[in-house]
Amino acid sequence: MNRHILYTLLLTLLPYAFFQPVVYADSIELVPSSRVILKISGEMTIDDIIRRIYPNESDLWPQIKARLIETNPNSFVQYSERLIPGMRLKLVDIKRIAEQEELEPKIKVGYVAQLKGQATTRDINGRMQQLEINTEIFEGDRLETAMDSSLYLLMDDGAEVYLKADSVLKISKYKITADYGKESSSIMDLIRGGLRKITGSIGASVSGYVNRMTVPGLPVAMTRTQSCTRWCSMGQLR
Picture 1 (cartoon, rainbow, N blue to C red):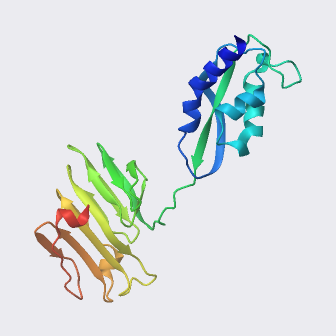
Picture 2: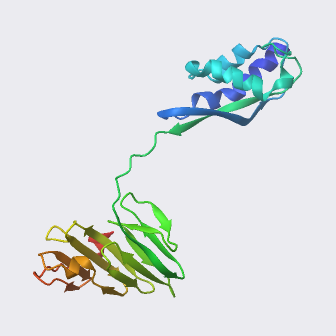
Picture 3: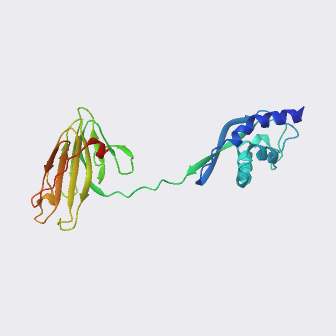
């Protein structure tokens, strides 16, 4: 009878073992599971249980055993690995910690000086963030204001950007050189809504530079030494 109970319990738990997803990770964590062996029979051993429930994790068997003993101190004979018949055994799950996502480096170009209502940003890595006062702004950010909201940015070259309600602005390029020379550039694409911009040191430089603002269907040049315009479409700027 005891042998029959053992195999019935193990057969119930085997699907969890064979259908665990294979995930490549640099570390794992053993956490208490919702799965439980309700009654330990006299023929059960901890090694037999581990082999049957975690057949594909042989490299983790020692750690699993130690975690099971730690999680179930009352189910083992004190100072041993021997199970006590009739007790419950709470199992453990293997939590895999995936390798840290490789992110593209970001270049800070300004910060949020004032904010009314709510606004968000999506960076070049696709990560969303709720904006607050003093939140840093980076090249490639896609900024969006909610209804009845507004956003005031102070850029690192001293430029000021006031983004109106229900607007979307992408900071496509913002490069600042030491002397604000021709290598400096400021390109912002207004995808929706409206804004006001006061030119900073990039626009005030006497050297050649690119300082450009574009809106859908209405490119606007903001340069002193050259004219650079671009037609924008929603599909190009997502």
